Image 1: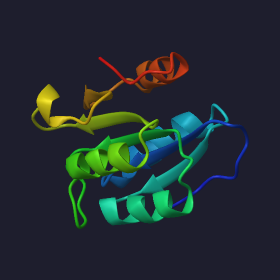
Image 2 (image 1 turned 180 degrees about the vertical axis):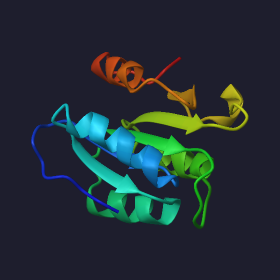
Image 3 (image 1 turned 60 degrees about the horizontal axis):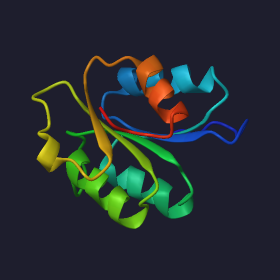
Length: 127
């Protein structure tokens, strides 16, 4: 689990079990002066959120491991941190809309991080 030094008010938590994907997405945001927290599973993500409850954006792979899967983690984040912009991603089957937490966006892998950034800029996580 890595964390970049804070460089601006923009902060994101990236929860992704595949290291190369996580590193690529983290690098994309870091290059745009975002503070990035990384977690390889739901357990690490919960630890990060316990320490940094003010993270405004979370990008969570639906299939990450840990005590809960990514979809359950997304619901956990929505319940404990309602204002968080949530993006749920998966390279497998799409997650049905009714299975997502309220105000969450599903993105199929591979996804365009520029799209995520645009939606964040609009203050929304919706399709």
